[in-house]
Image 1: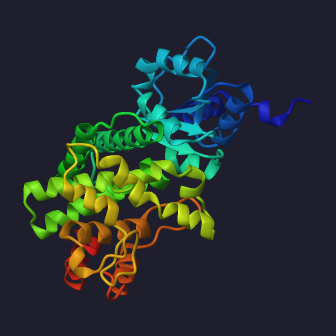
Image 2: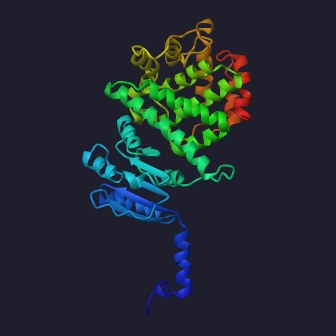
Image 3: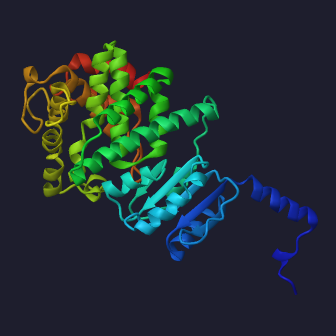
Length: 371
């Protein structure tokens, strides 16, 4: 007797085809068969999936809604194979790289190859499905979304390149980083902070997401305060560069889901001095930016680090950046914990009596809650 599941009427077969056609098409590329099979198995329940190995001849004809690449980017053959497919990759709206051997250099390499999103660490089905899902946002047209995604990609690429420069002791593209900050400022001026936060959370996780969120929040805070163009440029430049010292800290510690031990915490707290030391020799980095990079973890009561500065020693840009940094850390999305609501994050700031400038925290309310 035939298996009942294989007996379909013509109408049923048409229904299956329509259902299959309605599902978004995802193309998977991998450097090994088991990696390819693993990713396809994660996706095939929700997506129409096709896959191929990187060492096979490229056969992609239909333009997918997303491409997922799982490959070791330390292998130059894998990089070459991805570059050969660059023209076809560029047509997909989403290009997600899964990096199990994650490092700042690997992430930078992925963005250089056209990634719109990099997920470092062990492959995780919920994270991947979330990355492939588009939150409904009827207020944005597809062209607006594409423009905003471009700003995120440019900024994330600039941050990855910046971290790689520190890791490998290479020249730093100061102008490129500042230009990425300017693009973020343009996006937020046009459409506000909330859209930026949503887009960034959809595009990245961990340290890179944090840098993008801080920059967006600091820009909107500056705009709300009515700062001039020159001060706004200093502010977004300081925000882009503020965590550059974290390039010397392993991603496993930076993105650790559990509480840090004392040794790990001490290593994290070296990042302001490391960043300052790397940047201070660059003639395009102003003293105000250097000051912000070194002192964005200082508090008015002297309880911060690395120099235990007190109120009169902490400049205005640092005060604005510190509030933006704390708020962004509270609201950022991590796959292992829920995102804190903005109102709750603002209440945390209000509770930091004596550490943050009270008038600035009060002015920040509209940024946190309504802008």
